[in-house]
Length: 538
Image (cartoon, rainbow, N blue to C red; front, side, top):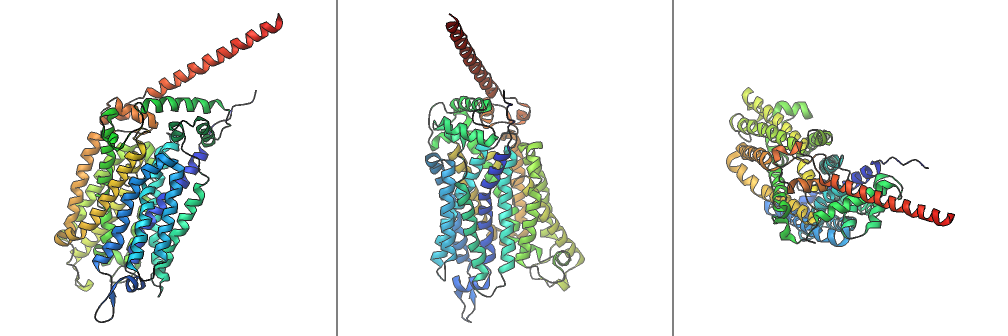
């Protein structure tokens, strides 16, 4: 008798890491345009001319170029729900990676047409928005439960890495005195899109999706591949039977429409609202404000400028972006470990406290200790220099804390909280929330900051306090649970503050029923063999 092959998750980890590259596209596309907007050749081609012959990119044109991406991302995030159900998870990745690549090609080929580059941004945004939903969906359905949080954090790590790489490339090309300064960083997106597009052909379909549409034999093959065992290994049928049992229990009542996401059945309304609210709180944490307006604050601190970039009166915005991007990448790495040790709930609570402390200190220091904008460095008082140092220190701590906790955890929660029949739609609604609030933040923040200055950070402080209360009252712990066990926990009405100690029973029941079924089948086979032996001996 041959030895049973020991299952391994290596294949699942490799696939999840590759699929998370969709997050890299997301991050790179967001980050690359901010540097392009101040490149001289870009401004000359797509800006307006002053009476003296110089060119400038008005705030309205900047808004058009940047906001069209948000319009596309919102539509893409919602539209992927239809393609996920119709063409499967793998087919959806293929479709939207292709659309993203087309959009970047349109942008790169733009010469002086504002319409062309904005349309290209919108088309690319469709792909970015879809990827922001389909990647957590796919990884949530294919990752083993013990590693699901870690593999979903990979998505956020890829997002931040994409932002950081775009900043580095912008820094390296911005001084080129022709269109290569912006065509190189923008055009590289075609390479990223083609990498994901070509690799997607080799991805397996989600086994949960296959079982949901009745393709058991194909689901068996995928499960065998993900666990690196032969197709006839007993583990394959055991796992398929358990999944089928749980999926059937989840999907009683058939397919669901969009309104089902807000139904009282199985507490779906609560899960959908939680997904939307976590994305809402995530976007108003305050970290994006530092990304957008870090230059304004950083350049007031001469002491830190000399430490970071050497002597000089002004820190290049490209260098500021690289610094914040590097901090974000490094800080996201511990989240790969903490998500499965501390868990989701504790990470969000700890992140709320840490970021709130940073926000209130930076806001008050910025208001009371910073010099007025435009003050020459030679006229800064020692107190104002210390204020600048404190502001930078807590800005870095704020961004770092976000990257460890509130950056990845809402995406993890979004990818693991919904039953199969509404999963694509519910994740789409959560992702759409991200893009709506991202747009509103970028639109209103400069106006508010213009009126109240650094005290805008007090608004983010209030949001973080609200986030702590909301997580404590409404967000349960999902660490170590399968997707089907998360469904059971909500149905059981477990209080969030008691959820960490809750033990599931549905999958145990499924395992017992599957075990009994297999035992009965083996008994029947044994009885049949005995009957044949008796017949043969007569």
